[in-house]
Length: 144
Image: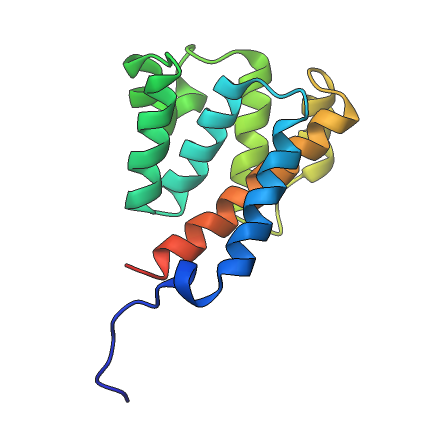
């Protein structure tokens, strides 16, 4: 085993990948998703993935966008509190299902809940947002 265990500077070693990932976010930002909801999804996935850097960043971004400390503090227990709307709850359930892959997950039921609040383009954008934050979390966790 090599004695060099330092993290790879990914931005330096694969800058074109980071440019492409940034462009995905530009495209996603053109969809009709509430920025507050995106902050919640990013933070929840980052909590699940145990990415300390990402949790700190997304918590700060959510606060800067006027999200309340109470909701942020209780996001981890969103299923057990009344702080979140039905649409937010459906999106958070989708976030958890796509972040923690489990063969027992009933994706059809979750999609039905999403369709009560979002159109197909929004569901597609939500799904891509969740996929992207999971990718970013994994890139960052590789540096832990």
